[in-house]
Every structure is written in structure tokens, then in C-alpha cells.
Image (cartoon, rainbow, N blue to C red; front, side, top):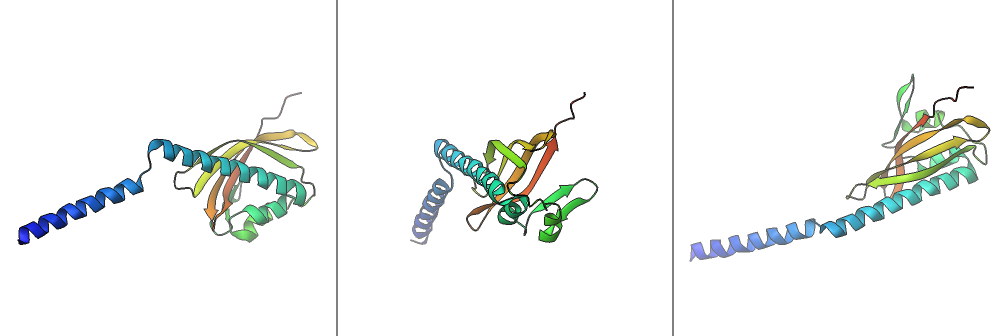
Length: 160
């Protein structure tokens, strides 16, 4: 009798384990759809960040979109900057509309739905030599996408 109870309990536990495993993993097509949805969200938030930047300035956009708790910036000669004070010291461009414009070209999102990147190109109005490409790392904080870090690389100067 004891062996029968152990066998029944073992089969029940095995069934529960398979059920949980089945719930934990999505079929590839569903996982891809989820990743595609995350990537669409990331592109939309990057465009919203750009729109807010144009309407309110780069400083205001940074205050709204940067994750100051986990975020950091890398500045040449200064290393890693963390915390709102240090990050915002580098983002003091409050001209409205902002002369900095960017356009996301792609995104990649983690299947977990809480981390992703966007990338694209940027230009600074009034300075035709300041163009380049960027990568922004995003994480979801309380349901909203926030910037963990971003990096921009200027295009090489055009020789005259």
C-alpha cells in the first residue's frame, strides 16, 4: 500500500512538473510574437523620447526617460557617471525645440519583456558635422520603459 501511495504521488508530481514546464515555455511562434511586440514597444518609446525631446528639450526628456536608479552614462575622460546629479550634469541642453534629433532604425528585446535596445542615427541642427549613430539600452520600470544608458558615436569629420 505504501509503495502504491508513493507511486501515485510520484506520478502526480511528475505530471505537475510537466504542466509547469509546459506553462513556463512558449512555443517558438508565440515567443517570437512576444519578442516582436517588445521590439515594437521599444521603437515606439524611442520615438516618444524623441518627440518629447523636440517639444520640451533634451534636459526635460532626459528627466522623464532616464532610469536614475540603475542608469549610467559613459563620458570620455570622466568614466562612468551614475545618479541623477552626475548624469544630468552632462544633459544640460534645454533649448526648445531641441537641436538634437534622432531616428530609431531597429530594436532588440529580451523575451522576458523587461530589457531591450534601440539603435539609429542622430543629427544636431546647425552643425552639419555632428551626425552619427546611437545605441540606447532600456529596461522596464513599473511598467514604463526607461533608459539605462545610451551611447552615441559621431561620424568621422568630412575632409574639405
